[in-house]
Image (tube, rainbow, N blue to C red; front, side):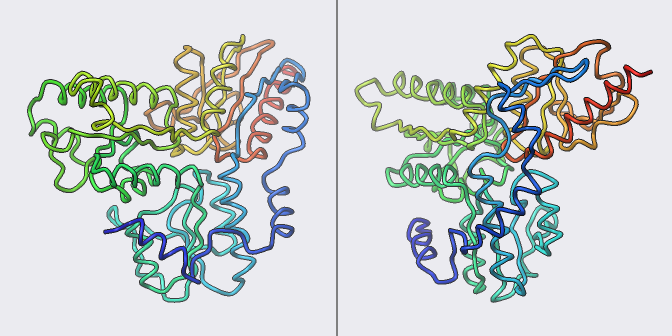
Length: 402
């Protein structure tokens, strides 16, 4: 499939919408009430610090809603304003935040159900409005919706679209796209749909395995089994790793993506010689600015003297999980929650350890004066962060009275 030609054709259709509908004023009021916070603004204005009683809060200097997420949510709200009586669907969560997605449900936006790992588009009829979320949708989904005669509202983040353009460049030169990401993540599914040949690597260890195979060969069957759900149809490691291009899921750790890119570059130089590198390797910077800023701010924050770290964001949010990784790398006690309600009475917290299931930890806030670092993922509204901080203040205040 000529994905570039399809996308160009789709964008010229009167049923395709990439911008808002002129209802910014009405939506701005809803966004401010639901998502913004005077307390968080106060902390920002006070050099990202707030002391109250025995608690000092230290906010990361970049956190929470990024521009792409805010844009996607605003366009989704505008869509309901513009189509007040039409049936509206969304192909996935608009962003990885439970409160934001619940607001859309309250506005009678339907979410396409997933049955046995497949989205059930049978509920969508011609003329229905379908929103594509911030992390995009696959070419196949777009084609299906276009063939159905739906009105498509595309809120895909421009940074994600930039990665798609990079993959198109790989395809033009017959390079295999090496995508640093999670093969099941919606963004990576969408990105890989624009590729011809691709291989998805989750981390440095998987990238190193691939590079060793490029240099020394290996067990082809073992390779295919190891990446069984992470490569294109018909992929052959003995044929399709001669020329590669690097792309990434925009929410991965910046340093890991950079290191993986350098690893493949060195590998191709060793294999084919520096003079032939450009014929076998291609790399563009596709690291999202907002993701990078939040990770850099977190790296700076964990160098301060903190007693613990609170990381707030959807449990299925990749960028939030990577913020949690940074705290854990510093051996700092860190708790990942998706909403303030996870902070329970009696100095308990329900949280998700990295790679684990939800657990409840008792006595998570130490006695006496404490300094709590706080950050949030790019899909987390300031209001959710405010509610969590308020619960910490209330819990420590109650402990002091007792």
